[in-house]
Length: 436
Image 1: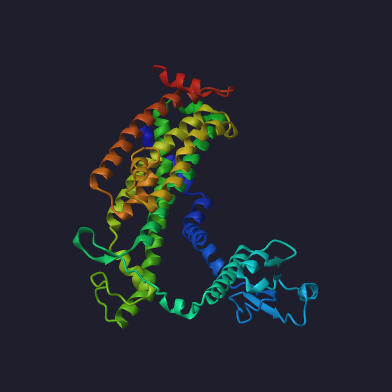
Image 2: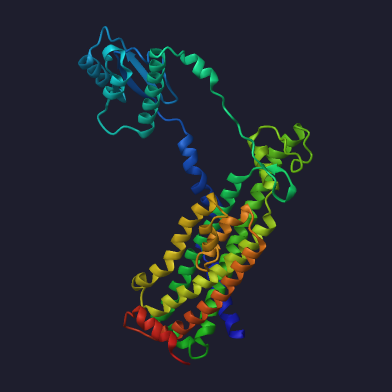
C-alpha cells in the first residue's frame, strides 16, 4: 500500500501543479455555462430585417405586414407586373420576391399550387415556414367564405388551454418540474461522460509516455504492475474529484448568489415565506424554477452521482490503462479505443430516450448494463427510481468493476514490457490468460 500511495501522490501532485489544471478548474464552470447557454442567447438576438417584396395579384395578404425580423413590402398589382416587380425587388436589394398569382375563378387551391418565392441564394427555413403558414391561414379563410362559413366565428371558438401539471408522488402535491429534472439529469450524465473521457485518456497517455521513455522498466523492478496501474488510476481520479469538487463549490456559490439577489426579494414582495409548501406561486419564471427545485432530492442525486462518477471512472480508466500498456504510441490506440468509446457514445443516445421516458424498458436495461449505467442511471435519477433498481445497478457496476479491473491488470502486466509490435485483440486475450 505504501508504494501505491507514493504513485498516487506523484500522479496527483504533478497534475495539480500544472497551469492548465488551475486555469481549467477556475474557468471550467464558465466555459460549461457558455456552451449550454450561449447558443440560446445568440439565437435570441435580433437579426437584420429581411424584407420580402410581394406582388399579390389575388389581394390576399395586403394587411399582413410580417413579424419580428421578417417584413413584407407590397407592390400594387395595377402598377406592377411580374417582371417589373421582380426587377424592383432586385434593385432594392430585398431578401426575396414572392409572387401570388391571380386565382382562376377565385379558387384558393390554384393559388396554393402556383405561389412562388424567388431569391438569389438559399431561403431561410424560418422564412419559408412563416410564409407557408401565413398563406395557409389566409387560403383557409377564403375557403370558409366560399362555403358560407364566417371565419370570425371559427376564430372565436378556438380556446387556448394552459395545462397545470401537479406531481402527486408520495402523496405530496408539487409543481411539475419535468424540464428542470431533464436538465439536471442531462448535465449530470454529460459531466460523467466528459470526465471519463478526459481523465481516462490521461491515464492512457501517462502509461504510453512512461512506456516509450522506458521509465516503466525501472519502476517495474520495484513495484508490481498492478500497483503501478492502481496508483496511476487513483491518482488521476483524485485530480478529477478535486476539479469537480471545485466546480460544484463554484456552482453552489453562484446558485446562492442568484437566489439572494433575484429570488428572495420576490418571495418577500409576494409574502411567500414558504415557497416549497405553497404551490400557488405567481406566474413568474424565477419563482417557478425555485419552487420546482425544492421538490428534487438533491442529496440522493449527489450521493448517487459520486458513486457512479467514481466507479464509472475506475472501470473505464482500467480499460484505458490496458490500452495504453498495449501500444507504443497514441496513434496505435485507435483500434482499441472504438470498443471502449462505443458504450459511452451509445449512452448519450440512450439518455435522450431515458429523459423522455425514464421508466421505459430501454432506460431500465441500459441503466443496469455496467458500461452504460453511469450515464443512463444519472439521467433517470431526478425523476425518481425505485430503490431496488438503484441498488441492483450499483451492485452490477461494482462486480463489473472488479472483474474488468482484474482483466485489464492481466493485460497491463504483459503489455508494459512489450515493444515494437502492434498487438491484435486475439493477442490481448492471450495476455489476459497468462499465469503469473
